[in-house]
Image 1: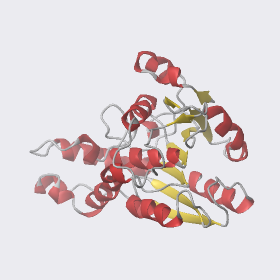
Image 2: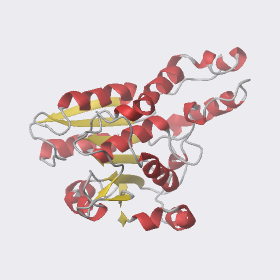
Image 3: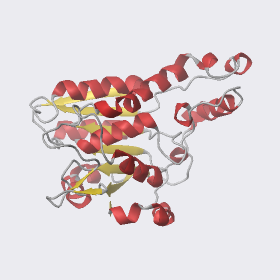
Length: 281
């Protein structure tokens, strides 16, 4: 399904909520719920996006998970949905896909997640004008289980996974498929936040909660976000080193897949198999 900008404004959030696909509960993450209790008992109040929580998207009863797909700059939800049809079909038994339009209209008629000065790349930009509007859209779409993005959409997915999503920004999708990304320097602190939260959750609970509570709280048994970073060896738009830098910032759950082409979402058999492997894990 494709969602236009009008379908995502806060006044109509309840309609979007009614269409949400919800996934089965994940027993492997029950320790994260305990962690929330532990964090709540800490003497100081942490930034909500620093808190590891049991995601609402994994506590619901629907058999299928929900994927939010984000087109590249100049694209649209409809055109991206058409292009991604092979992967949508390959995962149709376990995933529902929702393709979303960026909030910013370009002169070309396409959409964008933020705007830039002429001849400026995202990894060079000092600010990403309009990015907060796009993040607010994702907040209103929560809960969902996965984020998939290409190019500028991939960078938005990376920012969202680090920053956190939902009304409290205390949630993160379980899966991220990040294709053709560059490191969004102006929001780099958001991207890198995921790694710091994971490292703290994996081994430094004693710094976040009282010692008496930390002693009995188990660390999360797996990464907060499982991600696959797809990098084109011939990509001149967002060079391979940029994609690798994004993958490094994702920390514990990041894997990479490098393909022989340029700035595209590869849909050859090998690449699709890699995507399916991630989404079925």
